[in-house]
Every structure is written in C-alpha cells, then in structure tokens.
Amino acid sequence: MNSLNLSSTQIRNIAIIGVLLIVGGFIIGLLTPSLFPAQASAEAPLIDNLFQTMLIIGGAIFLLVQGLLVYSAIKFRAKPGDTSDGIHLHGNTTLEIIWTAIPAVIVTVLTILSWNVFNIMQAPKDDELVVHTTAARFNWAFAYDAPLSLVEAQGVDIANLNLPDNVKADIADGTLTIASTELHTYANRPVRMDMQSRDVIHAFWVPVFRVKQDVIPGRTTTVRFTPTLPNDPTNAESWYPVKCTELCGAQHGAMVAYTVVHPDEASFNAWMSERMMGVLFPPPDPVERGFQLLSSNIYPCYTCHIDADLAEFNWNGNVGPNLTVVGDRAVGTRANATGLSGVDYLTQSIHEPGAYLVPGYGNLMPNLGISDCDTRAIVAYLCTQTASGEPACTIDTEAYAAQCTAGAPPGAPGAEPPASAPAETTPEAEATAEATPGS
Image (spheres, rainbow, N blue to C red):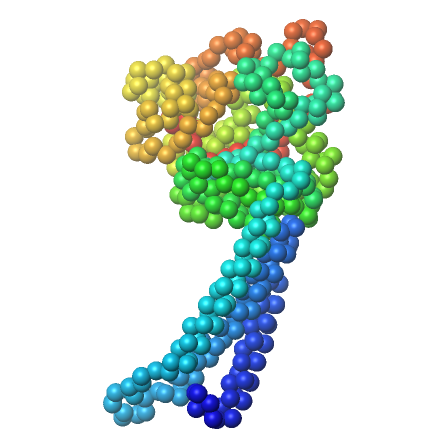
C-alpha cells in the first residue's frame, strides 16, 4: 500500500485516466489552432505554439475537472429518501500538497515560456519600418516618414517648390510625413508601431499577425512584427483587418482599419510616392481640397458625423452633430449663439471643439491637430454645405492659394508635378476617429 492507501487497481485506473487526459489535452491543443486565421507574420508561429501548449495543459485540466464533476454527481448522489448530512471529511494533506504544487509548476513554466516569446517579439530588429500610429474614437491613423528621394527620383525639385510653412518644417529632416487609414507594409520588412491615443484606452490587434497591444493616453506604446504573407494591394477584400479590442465608446465595434502587405519594397515605395505627390501638389481650390480631405477620411470625422454629400464615403456616424447643410447653420443659429462669423465658428469647432457644444451633444471631440491649410480647406468645403448649394461663407482663396498650394514660381523647375503625379485622393482612406466641426 502507499500513503494514500490506494490499491494496485486504483493506481492502475488513475494511470489510465491520466494517460487519457493527456491524450485529450493534446487533441484539444492540436485541433483548435486549425480554426485560427492564417499565419501572416514571423511572430505568428511563436504565439500559436505557446497557445497550443496552454491549450494542451488547459484541455487536460478541463477534462479532469469535468470528469470529476460528472463522476461525483453520479457516484455520490443522494439515494432516494436519504435526508441525512454528508460525511464529514478532514481532508488529505498529501493530496492537497499535490494539487497545489502541480498548478504552481504549470504556472511557472508558462510564465517562463510567455516571457521568452514576449522578449523575442519586442526585441529591436535591423532596418525597422517605423509607423506612427494614433488611436482615437473611433479610428486608426497611420503616419510614415517618407524619404524625399522617392519623389526627387521622379523629377520633383523640392528646393524650388513654394511649400506651406508646415510642410517646409516637416521636410527639414529629409522626410515628408504621409498618413493613411490603412496600415501599409511589405513582406519580410520588420515593423515597429509607435502608438498613442488621443482620448481613451484602445487596443491594437491584427489577428493574422497575432499581435495585440494596448494604446494608453499619455504614453507611447510599441509593438513589433514582421509581415510574411503579402496580400493584393488592389483588392481590398484581401486586406487584413486591424481591430480595437478595448471597449472605447459607442462606435467601438466600427473602429476597424486594414493592413496592406505589399509583395516587395518597390510596390510599397510606389504607394508611398503617390501619397507624397498628393501632399506636395494639392489642388489650388480650397473647396476641392476640403472635399478631398473629408472624403478620404484623412481626419477622424466620418465615424461620428453624417454628411449627405459624403454618404458614399461611409459618413454614417451617430455620435456627433449632422453636418448636412452645416453651412446654413454656421451663418445662422450658430452665429447667433456664438457671435462668430460662419468661417470663424467652423474654424473654432475644429481647433477648439469644446468651446461651443451643440445642444444635445457631449464634449467628445478632441483637438485633432489639423494644420492651418487643411483647416481652411475643410472650412471652405463645409461652407458649401447648404440647402441651396450656394456657399454660405467663403475663405480668402487668394491667400489660401499663395500660402497652402505647392505651386513653385512660374517657370521654375518643379513648378508643376510630373504628368504621372496623382491627385491627393486615393482608394485608401487616411485616418479616422471622432468628429469634425461640431455644428
């Protein structure tokens, strides 16, 4: 006999049950990952292997606990007519030590394995593509430092362009900031995401990459991964979803972006060059530029606002005021309530969204840091949102053209973009999270 007073038959049965539990755990652990999405990053196998280990152990424990519950419910159920109390047991010290020590060992092993995987994933890698990511209710915005050499190779003479002051300051380090609502990368290039939140806690998650990281206000959090499985940049249905997994408000479920993994660096650079051309050569008409900005969702507006003129661009938010015919209201009821002109009211609504709150709406919109030139363009467009179709207010178009368009001095090299240069708008959108002018 032994310290538990078990017979040889009982020991044999326990051994058989133990083997069955281990086999059951392996079956659960090996079959469940077949339900997972494709492994599209170098880190995905690490996560899947760790998760399989947890499933094997957890599956065995699950079967043991459920098996004991079923066995006990049958074996020790009260007999008909038996109303007596159950047997009073003092317990078994050896058994208690065993069922305390085994979980402690399991947790320790899993902690070591998890820490090892975490360190491998977060270790800096050579030649990382840095993506500046901003989360805000309810969108993801991705920004890149694009080297000027990409457009200079296409014949653009940056030195002779009459660029706005904010663009001049931006390119001082030899790069131009471009933004996108899609996360663009290319296969086998390590990526480092530097992430910040404009408002509340969000969580960045790309299922096919097996990466997840909280985005916390007041902090910059980082996540690294290396895409390995490219998709089709021309087919949006093949793009990988980016989701927020932290409940962040009314439109949390709609806070979805997409990842485009280009097949190679050339394809990625072509996309980046196209975006750079759009920044360097915006249209001179501020209304057209404003429409481009809002229809491309480069700023976080459509998830909170509705504008009938922009309905086809997914402007279906229900958190902020409706911007349909906002031009009429800007020079009417809003002007009466604030004492501001239509242009000043709309400008204030962008830069100081909490200065005047439309009755019935809370102070949810953050200051989005929209540049002066883009603000003027957006205001010019919103002024045209009237019942009659005629602008209710206007900005100084000559000042806008002189200060905000890329036109170099006439006849100067680079005064016009190359013939192949596209307009700012592209099939991709550029960043989205919350509200445009609170009307």
